Image (cartoon, rainbow, N blue to C red; front, top):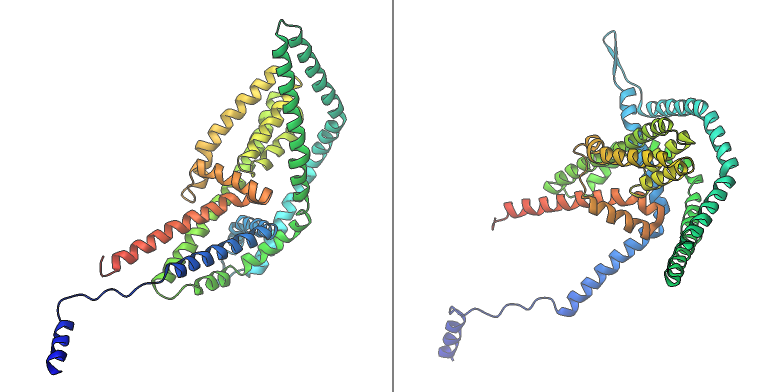
Amino acid sequence: MSVEREAAEGAGSSGESRPPTPGPSVARRALQVLLVALAVGGVVWTLYRLRGVLLLLVLAVFFAYLVAPFVSLVRRPLRIRSRVFSIPLGAAIALVYAMILGALGGLLLVLLPVLDDQLGELATELPGYLARIQDRWQRWQAGYRSRALPAGLRESIDRAVHDAAAAGGTWMTGDLLPRLAGALVYLPWLVLVPVLAFFLLKDAGPLRGAALRAFPRGHLRSRGDAFLLELNDTLAAYIRAQVTACLLIGVICTLAFLAIGVPYALVLGIAAGVLEFVPLGGPLAAGALAAAFAAFHSSGQVVAVVLFLLGLRALQDYVVYPKIVGMGIHLNPLSVILAILCGAELAGLAGVFLAIPVVAVLTLATEHYRGLRAAEALHSPAG
């Protein structure tokens, strides 16, 4: 027996490797993947259902970032006879709110009479514009039918035009108008935007500290701190660039439309400035409106408006806007277009506003995740 035991121990201590311990079963891994997919789907579904609240929160964040520089300016320490005075944060925010409200009120007092006159004139002339559109359409039909065109070709043209008009009407009544009506539901909620922005500004420090405490101590928390700082710079650069672009486009378009002689120049200029905040679709809609109103007066005005808008878009998109944004945010134009289209399809108007900030945050998070993995690989024993 002792010989057999020694032989067994010798065989056990030999250089032969034992078979590896079996890992998790395929069924267990499949269950883990399924649970992760369900969790992600639940989060996405919850965010979709709360898209209105998210849009309200995003607008509050936008407003907070716009107000923050003025709050910092008001809170600058003031030295009087070797004593330093500083306004409390809450009082500084309230003072800036009062200044903004007063500036908007003064602007409305100046612009409201002109806007009222132009909008009243537009409402009066609108039936005439529609009648002129119908008259031009009938003359165009009569012109191409009088030519020696084959009957089949004329029928194809009529059918294509009729189908395009029907599709446009269906899109207006079935898609655009319901979306606009759905967006009007959020208008009463806009009162909450400055209220939420007030608390975001007042509690920015505690909120940032709470977010950092979610990270474990050490390298991961320092990485989270860097991520939050860069996220703050990115969102601030994007939001302030958007608002600055809206103001520039509104002023420049108003002055240019006045110089060209486009009717309702102030209304169209303000519309261009507001629509500039809507990515991709806003500038196109503003250009189409300006060209349409110019077309009722002369073809020369249409050419001048189109050339001006093309030059303005090239200057704005490739020179001015990158200078305004600076180093804050860098997104591929294709990713921006796809993000806007996906956002509009998934969540309507809220998705259009949320698309670019969400893509920017995801891009920044991905870069920091790659940096964290690279740092871990560098400090690992294998590295």
